[in-house]
Image 1 (cartoon, rainbow, N blue to C red):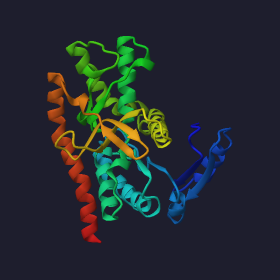
Image 2: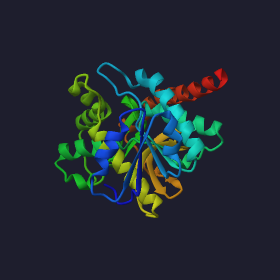
Image 3: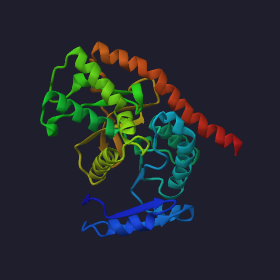
Amino acid sequence: MSPLVSTLHLYDIANVKGVAADLSHCNTPSQVVDFTGTSELASSLKGVDVVVIPAGVPRKPGMTRDDLFNINANIVKSLVEAVADNCPEAFIHMISNPVNSTVPIAAEVLKQKGVYDPKKLFGVTTLDVVRANTFVAQKKNLKLIDVDVPVVGGHAGITILPLLSKTRPSVSFTDEEIQELTVRIQNAGTEVVEAKAGAGSATLSMAYAAARFVESSLRALDGDGDVYECSYVQSDLTDLPFFASRVKLSNKGVEALISSDLQGLTEYEQKALDALKPELKASIEKGVTFVQKQAVAA
C-alpha cells in the first residue's frame, strides 16, 4: 500500500506465484514480481533497495525463540549471503527470530563477504514498540496516536525493556502498573502463541509492525530528514555490540543512535537493563559463533 514502493519482489521456496498474482490485483502503484526456489534467489535480489527477511519457522507453544535457532540460523545465513552477492548496498531488515542472534549472524556473513555496513543492518523490533504503545494507551485511556514508548535492549523475553518513564506524552505509573505492563510487553509474543494454540505465532501484528518500519526506511531513503524508529542495530550505547534503541534514519541507514533515552533511567529500568545484558550478550555470541564455526567447517 505504500506509494514509496515501485516494485515488490516476492521470494520463497514454494507457493509464491499465487500470492504474487493475488497481490498484483490491488490497485496500488507497485509492480509485483514473483521468484521461486534457490535458483531464482539471486534474480529476486538484483537492484533491490530494501530487503525484508521474515523467513523461517514460527514459534509453537512451549518453544522458546532459541529452539528456533538452528533452523532459522541456516536460513538467514544463506539469504544474507545472497544479499551480499547481489545487492550489498541494500537496507536489510531482519525479522527472523531469534532476532537477538540473527542480526549478529547477518553481520558476520556480511563481514566475511567484505560488504558489511553496520548502518544498513536492522533488527526489526518495532512490534515491541507497537505493543507497548497499545497496552499503555489502553491502560491509561490515552489517544493511541499520541503515545510513543521507546523500547530498548533486544527482542526476546527479559531483553525487551520498555522505558515507561520516557513515554510520550508524559504519564505517571504506579510500581504495580510498571511491573504489569513491562511483563505483558515482554511476554506478548507468548500471549499470541498460546492463544493460537499451535496454529503459529504473531503474524498480523508483526506484519503491521514490519510495514511501519519498512515505510519509515523508505521515507528515509526518499530524503525525509525526520524519521525515528526503535531498532536492534550495531551500537556503542552500552558495552554490548548490538542493542535496540531509538535511531534516526537517513538515506545512508542509521544516522544517529539516540542516547538520551538511556539517561536518567528509573531504578526499576536500570536494574532491568543490568539484568538483560548477560542474556543478550549470550544470544549475540551464539550468532557470531554459529557463523564462525560454519566458516571453519567449510
